[in-house]
Length: 165
Image (cartoon, rainbow, N blue to C red; front, side):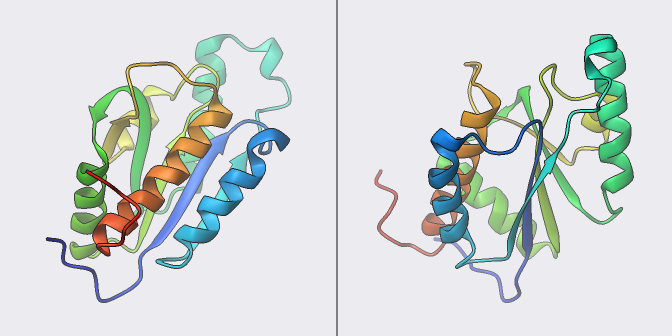
């Protein structure tokens, strides 16, 4: 069903905000550890700018966006988590990861925006915009859902027993 890639792609999860909440940190770490069996994984928690409370919503998004764009390498594949993005089921995500890897993607970054979402410049730079759900979730839960779904995608790719359909 899936062709697994011959080389290892690196995955990074970027999230604007606070460090992992203590209540869900162990679950995020568990799924991150599981993903690491398939490929290198790194979390990048991007702190909210110090003067965030003094900025307008648009100015804050613009400042966060500028920082993100400066950190991105040109050849990084960026997946922006966005409420208006395309919805994928778990098999669709597995297909997406397989396709990107087979196309030679070396680094795949999944980006969770700040409290007000992502700046338009970041969304334009994104190679793919993904909506987890039409529901709104707290950012900390998005981190957990993201890590679990990427782990699930790898088990689908490897035809392991985690995913049932």
